[in-house]
Length: 446
Image 1 (cartoon, rainbow, N blue to C red):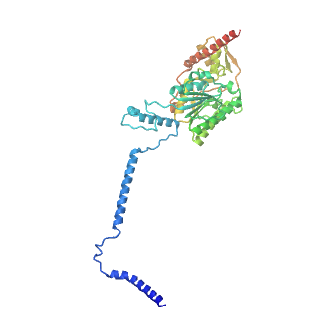
Image 2 (cartoon, rainbow, N blue to C red; image 1 turned 135 degrees about the vertical axis):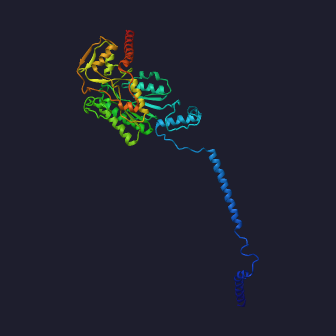
Image 3 (cartoon, rainbow, N blue to C red; image 1 turned 90 degrees about the vertical axis):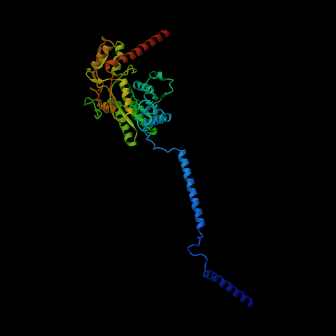
């Protein structure tokens, strides 16, 4: 009991001593005044500031090395258009090789988003031409290949001929695919020239359902391809969208006078629907499109017996047959040479205007006047034979090309009397060459 009391009193004494120590310590005077007493935190703070300064210097050094090693990036140019993309690639290659400095001068800058500078070679595009084995399509392929482009021809050979393209076989920038555009196809291209469709009455009346499917489903497939790969799309429409016109000459704003249930409507209304689809893809989906309305065209590689008036007259005159004129021969047409048309199509594709554009020669001829020109060029003794006119045959057809002149800088340069002899030379070789082949084959078989 006594020991426990002494332990508790000892504990109380110790606690009392601990609580009194700070007070007693504070009562003693310090040898330092409050002004000259050193701070207990001055050492760690200086060390921290020194570390921060060191880290800052290291960061600046790393950033300087990075920006010195990696060049600053410039704003990315607009490459949505295939033409702009090709222009940018050409300009970039020229800058790397020093070509632009030599052309423009060392003190001038290059605008990658603009046009290719004069003297700078344009990089070839990858282009698909549907119906490229046909009359107009094969001449278009010739121009594109000669320009340095890579061309893919898609054709089902209903009216197209391999002979029109045989001179390109073996060219690494040329490909030929047998395919019907009513079935989808996937290709990587920059531009699409959509020409696929029989264009003469003999051919498009042969299977009218197939004709309108080609115009509608085929155009849908090609527009879908343009949408998927970001290609620019050109539709070759026709002056037949004006029907039997009540306005003369025909301007692009004229809506036409078409019989929707006639024997020609598979072609006329098919092309009108193709134009509708093209504009809807343009407005609704932002596809780059171009529309050309082609008037009567003639030249080498036309089908010999396709029912069109120029090819009919030329083939009949060469064979010493009467020239067949339907009706009274007073109906008028305008005829452009194929090279003029191809120039117009290419200007339209490379330009910045959607269209539609009339592409034709405003020189107007009656059928009797055309027959007289054929007589002058081939056979003055050729006779003219009149036959009943065909259904829904337009009475007048003449393009107003003011829009193409102003916006495309295009107009035809070859007159009928200049172009017809070139076509006659081609027809003479094909007609009499085929006759020679036929006679030699019959002699061999005998």
